[in-house]
Image (cartoon, rainbow, N blue to C red; front, top):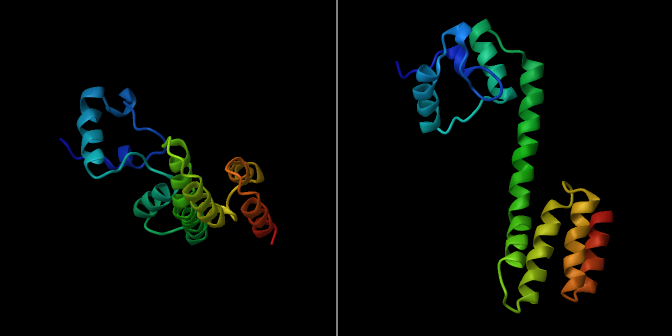
Length: 147
């Protein structure tokens, strides 16, 4: 059978064989392949709460809201990090004399990640700006962070 058992899907961490439950390697291989077809690599905490609600017939609303807020923060950080990652890719991915492009990319990226990054991460961008002789912009972005 290629359809995984619900208890197999609804477990945290990686899904592995379990002889006690009859989940042999031969059985779980097609199950994991089926789940991967749907882009479902593993169950996170939010998935487990949904699975628990299915099994129990009710939702732990407080826990669900807490996990949804946490997931939203993760999405916000990932979205904010796009320009930051692009800046680093530009910096590391070229031998061109493109200091102006690098400075602009770091400025945009640093403004996006300011509220999410640590001082150490943010300072790496400041160092790059100083390295490409954009001290004025580095100072402006430090002020931006401190506001």
